[in-house]
Image 1 (cartoon, rainbow, N blue to C red):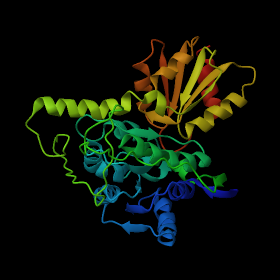
Image 2 (image 1 turned 60 degrees about the vertical axis):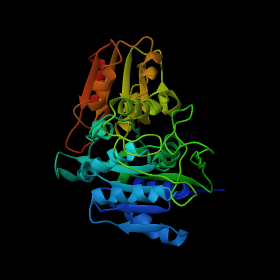
Image 3 (image 1 turned 90 degrees about the vertical axis):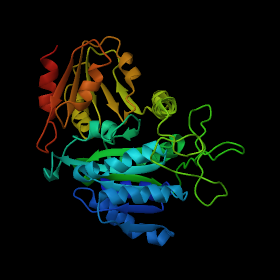
Image 4 (image 1 turned 120 degrees about the horizontal axis):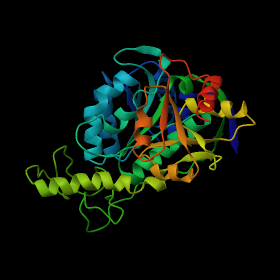
Length: 366
């Protein structure tokens, strides 16, 4: 049986986390993500879970890493300034292969910026924000329903690949109210457990080690130092460090087509929009407003790892138009993979692109 509710995106995100089995939330309130924490504070105690407000976002990230190592699905939520504070421990989560979920309801920056206005300025930070080399998974919802669905998916992907998984939303989707279907059950894919005779950080064929939560009968050492497959520090071994880092990157990057989540409209088009998150709504409306035009559209629900293979599906494309609520962060990534011109359509200040402006941009390239 499915419940149908009219809710805002942040509440749908919290409901998705609860449905996915999240039972530990640690966070610090920050606009425009605070409703996620508020809803988790209401829901978790009734389900035998734990909510804790931490002193800041760095501590919040540390807490969910600890929660994850007890075997509990764990999550935090924040916005741009808090996301910046989390970066040290996001790198720790990536290096220790800790499955956890971070919700980022993006707002205008830099610094304190626009606390109540939308942006997409954290997209490159999600991928490259912490020092060193590693890979993560980042999803981008464009509807309230997707806030629910992709939160569930983020938990499954975090466990599948043992990485911090990000839901990169924004103030518009976070505070938008829409009709949402809440199923009684969702698919919850359990983490792969360690096999008998294998070491705690010994990878299997998919390059992902089995997970070994504390207190489950195995001896596990977890460190942010370069470590061997036993988990013990080996930070002065150049070859071991290179092998470890390459595996952490490759386990995600080589699965990019498995992780990819997207919509394609009119793959035969010569003029193609590429979008993610809130701008997708403006593109969809623009296409409805131009029934006589033959424009294409690629909507990305997975942004990292970047699914560059999808760009080849537009075999006739002459130009790619990329509306973003930043100065072209993902447009730069797209340009790396195609020979055609990539035209950023930036929007700053918190207001979404106007569909008529998108159509004008398309007409200029006909």
